[in-house]
Length: 352
Ligand SMILES: NC(=O)c1ccc[n+]([C@@H]2O[C@H](COP(=O)([O-])OP(=O)(O)OC[C@H]3O[C@@H](n4cnc5c(N)ncnc54)[C@H](OP(=O)(O)O)[C@@H]3O)[C@@H](O)[C@H]2O)c1
Image 1: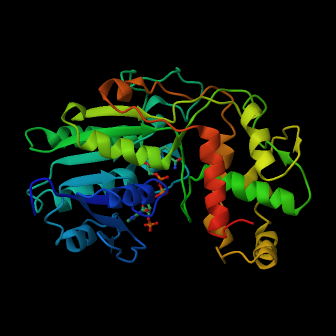
Image 2 (image 1 turned 120 degrees about the vertical axis):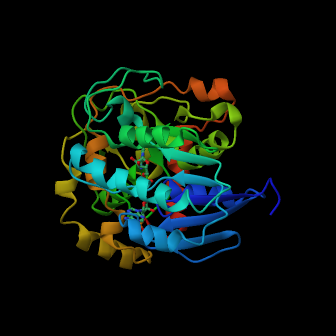
Image 3 (image 1 turned 135 degrees about the vertical axis):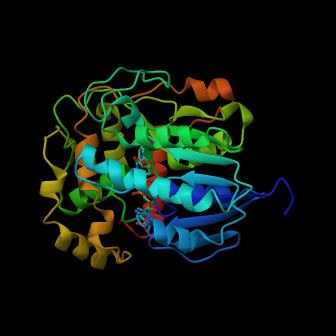
């Protein structure tokens, strides 16, 4: 192994973020990739997968024991819980278990990249200061992203490795069986509206339709994450990463409707978690009628996350200029991102 060769450990390799990270790293000539998740996966070229339960320190020690050549950890695992407080213990434990298992056996470890989000800024709590900046003051805990970063910061003292923290907005990317997947929410909701012969209604809170927000394309996020993990100037720094354009649902929603050849009707606040709960038979009938892949309804149902995103009746954006000042200049047009993701879901025969 020459000194330029790098071995990535992508933790949470089946997630909406992790999958795209694995995919991007596999296109780079100087990386081998090991993906971690409970479900594991088939090896392909320079990618292999290890199935592990990150909540178990013992399982981590056992399953990671052979990964002595890892140079970079990309942490993007996530355990969903119903409250902000309940998110902390499992999400902190998984990161600690990975670092405890790997650090003693991987002498070439150079970097640990932590995937965070705008929760660091209190975006999930209510109207927060926008644009949010990396230098903004912390807010009242509990917040798992903050605890994870504090753990890495203290663990890094006196070590040869460095860390970086990446803060995306809502992420757009392909994944199945994930609790936070906005593109899938819209794609399935729109496809079902079409099937039922009804127009596309924005289901969010009154006030959410005309607020400013932004997204982060999972491919762009992967590039930014690897960039930050491999640049000296980015060591021990946090970066907001977003597409670079703001939008309002009032403008975006009709464009998304047009893609599905749907009329738009005025918004109607409703809980998707509630109104989509009885739609499994509709989904199954659509799969038969259109010859779709037999993806289980639960694997395309991030309805609770849809309700969360569509409840934001306040601006939701962060300043992305720090990453640009440090040298990352890529951007993605958000409308093109959505339409590209819908195209991809059609190609994969997930939606009609
Ligand atoms: N999605 C978004 O829109 C978004 C936006 C901003 C920030 N973020 C942040 O980014 C991070 C990753 O989010 P994500 O949406 O990519 O998560 P995700 O799609 O739910 O993926 C989570 C990954 O972790 C793995 N995992 C979960 N529990 C595990 C366990 N006990 N052992 C091993 N693997 C486990 C899952 O695979 P298995 O199920 O196979 O175990 C999956 O690969 C989170 O901190 C999240 O808050 C996400």
